[in-house]
Image (cartoon, rainbow, N blue to C red; front, side, top):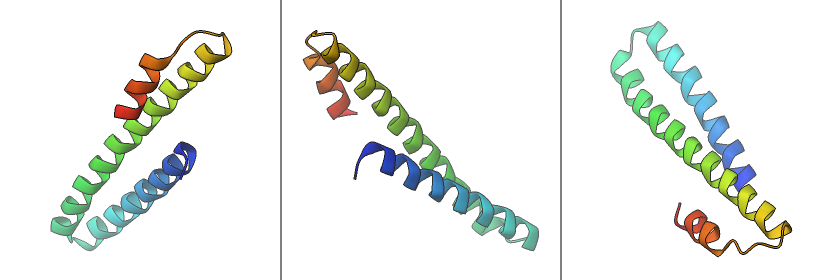
Amino acid sequence: MNIDEQIERENRRIEDLAIEIVMLARKGETDIAKQLERDLHNSLEHLEKLHRRKGLWSITDELNLQGKKAKVVKKVVEMA
């Protein structure tokens, strides 16, 4: 699965969690909503990492197009 697919999957998960949290809150089921809030927070952090990784890959591609060595950037991206 490429990075764009991962980002799209995480976006859908975030949207689903947000909808579910609102529905649970309206029903007064705040304990379950709070649990899902933690999942939502984790998904947002993961999405942020995916966007950073995508940005680093873009930098690597641009450097390669310029004929510059981008091994260090590639290694950082692989570790992210």
